[in-house]
Length: 73
Image (cartoon, rainbow, N blue to C red; front, side, top):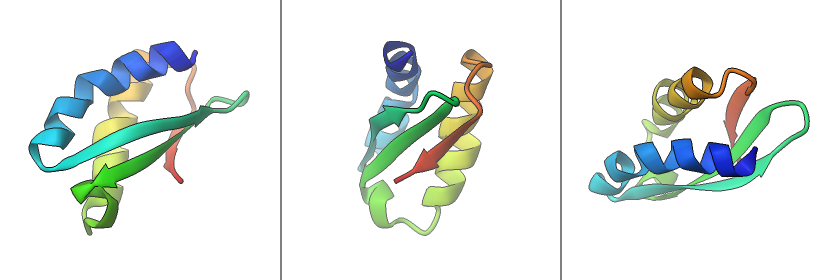
């Protein structure tokens, strides 16, 4: 499952990097929660929660319906 999540994250990574940020996959739990760490400019950005929920989580849930949520750690 981690490989599949990483593939989806790789699709959104260029958009994050264009703004000076990035995302790192930390863990995929047994109950379908993806844990990521925002990096670079995304780490301290006031809009990071919106990026996480409206960008990263939306794409992951669309492509991997078995995932329940995406959380920042």
